[in-house]
Length: 424
Image (cartoon, rainbow, N blue to C red):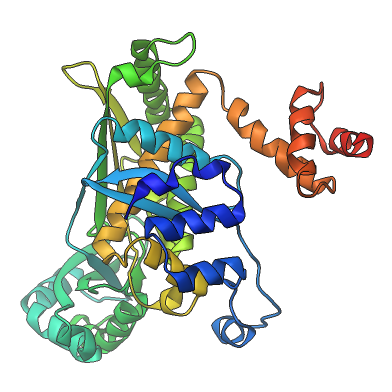
């Protein structure tokens, strides 16, 4: 991939962007034709079989974040999102972070969790003992329920027993840790849990109430870190040291104040969800797991941590549960998802985890940096002005002309945009 072909990508028109991607080796000739022909939408026949009561496709803008250097590898990141400024912010942050060596990542073993929760267990202590001594038998039955994943090297690997006694009555939950290989694995895990439930009822004397995966994937975690030279943080009237310290302080506020933490983490998820959606993965699962992880202390807190090292440079870290896959679901059937994986170089599930968590960290850096310097509205409102221009009916070159005048107007709203358009 020759990323030099992508310089000033945002300044190119639509056809120039497609040609630049082709010249850079990011997409193939076939992919370029698909983009030029705007053929990333689902066919009606496929959409009709994906969901119930299908009536059409709801499109999201599909864009590319630039400048990412992840584990010493240049990556062009596809993102599907409707919110202005997100892709620009991610690209801007990635450029600054790349100047300090880019992102370094680490992922745990990819283990998903299935749960069988039992009620009316006559003797909890005896049931716990019975389950423990039958661990191998439980794992064997789980794997017999889905032998194809075992053939690929995955399958049920271990169990964990939890007694839920905060409420009356007491429930007994058995966790099964499952290696789902390259798939996110919801169907795999659910099939296994249904397969072992009758045996667990027999072993414990209880009744199976729930048999399903947990989306709180604490056994499948991804971490991204970055170090930004303090000199790269200087902007306008703010020195690098001031920007660094204010980012650290703003993150401290998000750690202790849930009201700030929610907005802080929303910025993280702007980046995370956009990549998860673009790659055909389950963004609801990733979001739910991430917000649960933010609450693991008993209070909802910041997902990111920003600090300084001995050299005075800014150091950022983000750790997230990351239940995503590289195969299965809509990944192999949605044209947009298939193209996203091509652009990323057909990553493995672990590689995709590394990319997504890096984007989340970049997005958070960009948002907090904007907040503690010029304010979030300066960059955001420039793109918002274009959205208003389009809503007012502007087309082609009129969009930028209206947006430019709108940014100078006393009131940036739809009525003003319409007035400007009429004058043009």
